[in-house]
Length: 65
View 1 (tube, rainbow, N blue to C red):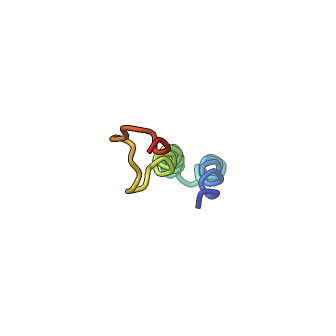
View 2 (cartoon, rainbow, N blue to C red):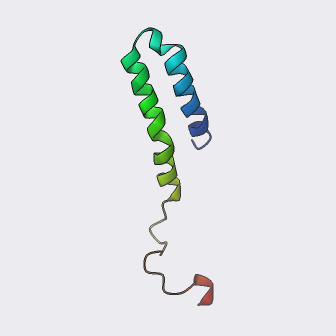
């Protein structure tokens, strides 16, 4: 899945304005909006921490224990 995201965004943009706009401009705009939202969502998902990770309440460095 991670390798799919970098390929999907340009494919959506190119496909929207090269082919889909010939049939439906609103659909092409919708495809571009979806392509615009994918990178920030992917960054948020990739940067999230696990349920056992402590980060807001870290008092000391984990290696100092």
